[in-house]
Length: 557
Image 1 (cartoon, rainbow, N blue to C red):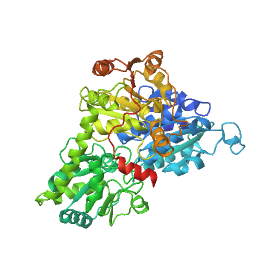
Image 2 (cartoon, rainbow, N blue to C red; image 1 turned 30 degrees about the vertical axis):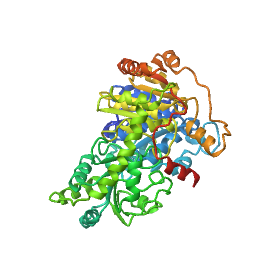
Image 3 (cartoon, rainbow, N blue to C red; image 1 turned 30 degrees about the horizontal axis):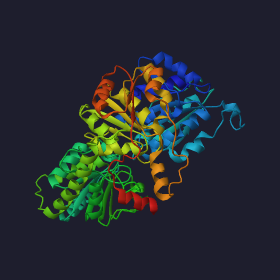
Image 4 (cartoon, helix red, strand yellow; image 1 turned 90 degrees about the vertical axis):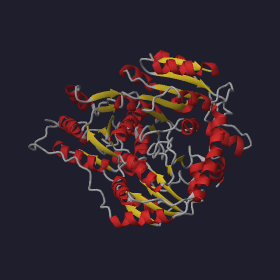
């Protein structure tokens, strides 16, 4: 058995079902070895490494098993760096296999050579090199452990071109695929945290990605219901409490937070954050006043202590472990009457709902993105997955398309990279084929990865792409108009006809410009047998509701 075959056997034991990649001379032998395992591991050949690695990222988020991407040495591997950074920032388990130049050429500064390990080290949980085939099982085992332990994240495994086919000489090498032991939960920490919440006049729970990744959403909802405490979420925490639940205030912070959740963060006297920290996003770059006492439960103590807004009570624990103990501890609890707190929050809710209602009933043409997404909601089942890129377009599903389950809204939250939404949708459909998957993207975002429409058509991946087409990088265009007295440069662009372009790839395509056509076109697109693209021509002056005051304060600060 050679190195490539050994890695494939390990991936099968790990539970890997797909590998996303691009072939090159430095990984040629690995792809050749995959040929004999086509029934067990599906190889998805992509058209750009950013797409391949983002697909692996999305798979890792959805399954908890590291998504796997394969790249060619040098330029191919560096093309994946943005996607690796997304996975690192959002705690997504991923393994990037990179080819490398032959061992005899290492250090010669030749073609295709780059110091992958140095370049990727700051954006990975670990970087590894298989110098000899006999080290294959040990390296893969170590990499897996780092990818799935603690805060989770991506790892890099570099394999020189001449090592893939080198025979493994050691007898029966064993894989050890296990996460590191979670930090032990101290029951007294749970009691301390609960006492602070019970004694608070204006308590708030902030639910983060750690709740989603640990599968603890039902426990979080039970705790909130027993305590009768409102819940706000971070970007990765969306859906950990259904956004139609009466205790859910929605997402807090920049990039889609609403004024209700933001006000709750500013007015709460005790905040119990589970599976999260108070990041620059949640706090509008720390310009949002958050004076309340902060209790944070996070598996990563370093993350809690390194953030600008440190907790008064940091609890190093897995979110699920904490919530299991907390739910049991409050089973006989009777919450006090906090009428003033709820009246304040309901007032904020009423104001926000009025803004949402006004926007989603818009009859303007060019279209309002709010109206389009509002109509889409009525056509989608509850069990849907929404993916987004980076830009103004993501504010529409934030405000008008409620997230009802954890890990059903996928976004490059903490890195903000464009180009994530479309590949994430492709992977989500492969992982969850029974679900409707919709990518809601800006035109600028889609232009960065649309070449992989060919991948979607070739692989028969049925996703719907809504392109919110305003012919500009609108976030920056707005800032130029507001902050630079209309000095517009580099934010307005021409676009192809995305519907015609989709059809040229073999996908279905529609151009949507009229209010009367919204529901019929979306219905047809959702019913398409394969990938479909709807080019939604929207009014660049149309802005969904968001916390304008906090956003302006952040941008000026």
